[in-house]
Length: 66
Ligand SMILES: [Zn+2]
Image 1 (cartoon, rainbow, N blue to C red):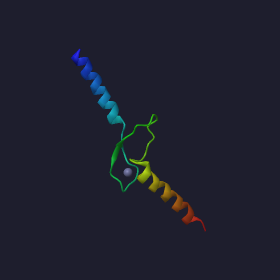
Image 2: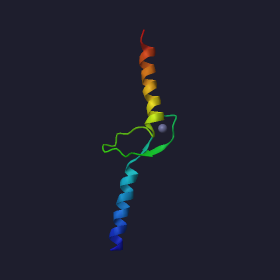
Image 3: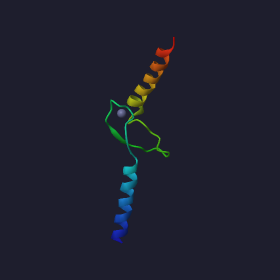
Image 4: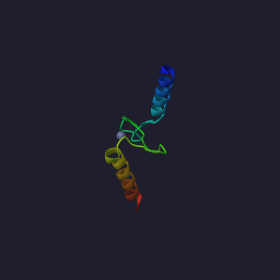
């Protein structure tokens, strides 16, 4: 019984590790656990890094306009 439990725990840990992501913000070196179903989360925190990326995109759009 114990080996089965152990292998189940191992695959659980492997599944968790596969979800560990690096934050998409180059200035941020945090890693986070992607809890989304499709695994498309990009930032450690939407309130800080996600917002910053959104603001930077917006700035780039408005600045390049003549
Ligand atoms: Zn971040």
